[in-house]
Amino acid sequence: MKTALVCGAGGFIGSHLVKRLKREGFWVRGVDLKFPEYAPTEADDFLMGDLRDQRVVSGVVDRRFDEVYQLAADMGGAGYIFTGENDAHVMHNSATVNLQVLEASRKRNVGRIFYSSSACMYPEYNQEDPLNPKTAEDSAYPAAPDSEYGWEKLFSERLYLAYARNHGMTVRVARFHNIFGPEGAWDNGREKAPAALCRKVAMAKDGGNIELWGDGQQTRSFLYIDECLDGVLRLMRSNWTGPVNIGSDEMVSMDQFAHMIIGIAGKELGIDHIEGPQGVRGRSSDNKLIAEKLGWTPSRPLSEGLEVTYAWIAQQVSSGRRDDASLAAQ
Ligand code: NAD
Image 1 (cartoon, protein in one colour):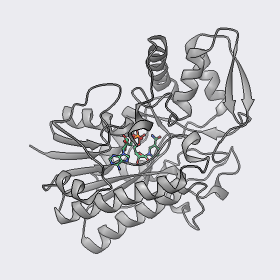
Image 2 (cartoon, rainbow, N blue to C red):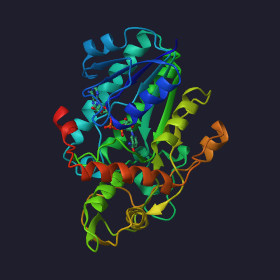
Image 3 (cartoon, protein in one colour):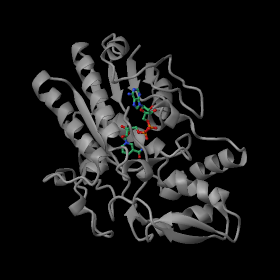
Image 4 (cartoon, protein in one colour):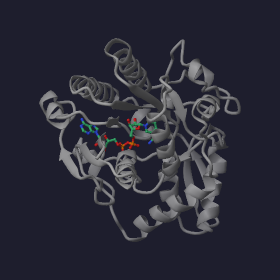
């Protein structure tokens, strides 16, 4: 039986990845500071542990896993990443996890290791025009990410690629662009725009308004979790060795995005544009490379994934559930 290790298995993407690997017949070990908050883990073995700690990590990577997925990171949406208040934690915590997990995986000679980087590593100067953002993989340099989170991702990408060159490890690096779906943070200070807007719409009274950070003209694209996992597994098992975008190229303004959610909810709501952290002015995934090298691009429209996500968040809101566990875990 093939074995996989998922680091960050208590988080949004990690918990979905565990389910997918189980469906594929893997024996899966998950590790995180916390259990998944919204559904029980499906991992065969789930270790609660701090991946910054070398002793913990050598206990976690105690065999030659066929596949290691390193998704653990100190991370959140714009309200966590772009305020500046969490910069030292973000850089220290995520870089330490990456250093420890990669070195332990080298010692155990694991089959393949996947690292989840982010579109946040792309230079700010290429994302100033909301209608023409540039995110081709080879546009990463000269580097100028707009957040320390992005700088740490760039450092860690380079770390993984250096281990591939110097230690002959089989490394795969994806740059995720705004992944969304059910069973992710929606109200704990780390939620990202899709979940935050779904929550605001679900909580708003018909005829009222929702608040949106910025003027609404900033652009983004969003990729549904199932499609993200299709891309991750395709990349992991391919021979392509360079970093590659995993995202959608269906670019929308944040106003359009909010109106899509309002339409799904079937409510009449206005939008109040307020000051708030926003990140770059425009961003969408450039999918030329992944289409060419892996024959993959997302297959379903944004609205489909949004319908499922809105339904899940509306259910959380109407059942009066709280979403405050993950900040406490840090
Ligand atoms: P998430 O916050 O839901 O999951 C990350 C998990 O890592 C959390 O459960 C957290 O507890 C765990 N973790 C953090 N520090 C840890 C430590 N010291 N020891 C053990 N576990 C630790 O985030 P996610 O959305 O699932 O993202 C997964 C990965 O993908 C992250 O590396 C993130 O930076 C990257 N990414 C995500 C997106 C997105 O849109 N969700 C976009 C770009 C990149």
